[in-house]
Length: 495
Figure 1: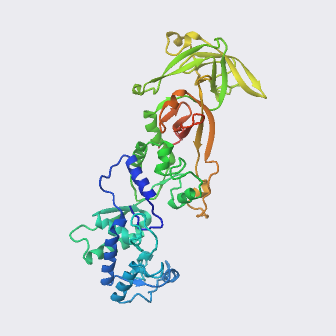
Figure 2: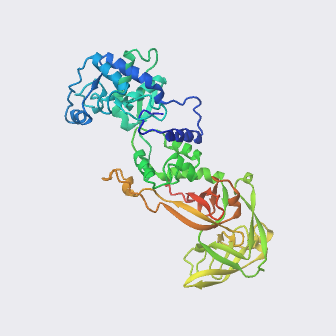
């Protein structure tokens, strides 16, 4: 854990990383390390650098340091404090450690080359004064190492051989090598292989903003509940949304590792999730846009139990019973008064199979204010699915339904992109703007079968014809919530 900056790192981040690694199915055993545990070694190494004339205390303010650093086309200028004596540098550094100076009054810089074409090698800062309490070390320290100093030393302490990072750190590799090689010259890390840095392209996913800075803004401005909000492109968010860890493993196995910067289609990630969910989750029936269906040729008290497999290809997931009755709900889109071409669902005079139950023929419908309010059908009692007589009825349409008396109300949370395209674009001229999608959360009232409510929070389902959903909240029996994980449709265009 790189926790060298006390102003940015918190225990919350640590817990989240540890939790996510275990959720993905990995076990790091006893190998959990914190850079802050090495603060003493870092400090001793810094003093050794001073003694070997490899580092010095610079008393310029931050503006002067920045101005004297130069540009890509202009060399930097040496600090007037660059030739301080070793003894004076050591004395000031010790006083920095004991808190005798204000933040920004002094810094420790590497003495490399202010003429270097690589700006990272122009006497980079190694230590800063920060009078900030550390989340693990408390108030023990008021000087903290910077990443370019702490990172290579941490790797060497832990006997890392290959330090993997993303391509934006390629220009930092020279300072990485300079630190470990000179630490070795100063007497550290003897008789061991020194670590080396290797860069690979970062994972960029189409339509996803993965910038920690921007996501922190989203959380801090309360645009989402927290880091684990289902709309957040974080592992915590993915877990809450219902993405299975196996999907991430398969996704990373497919895309591999590359040196070339590229963007992966989000559809590939979703297809990996969908493939796992399709094999593992139970099916349920949900009616999102209900239209009342009345079976006219049965009594009000008529009921018929329909036994349904929870998964069409996996008998181990068991069965459930769905009660058929006189008054049902169907999807409004499953009935058309004037059917379009190739519409094989319910129409006036037409027949469909009410899935898992009977074949029904439409005998009429009613309208209110120009909108269909109910549909009337008659069923053929010898057509029940699974019975011998059902084979005598050949229909093209097959629609799902719920019994009005047993269906339960629920809320479906439908998640859309958290950011608009302006924020996603790498060429955005408004780098600091969030461009949040104000309609990223859509709430829909629906009907669900009772068996879905009997499961534990976090259980994933496939709602037939609608997509994959997760039971998000069942504490309030008046408003059971399901969150949408993915649609059923595969939008990824396979090569």
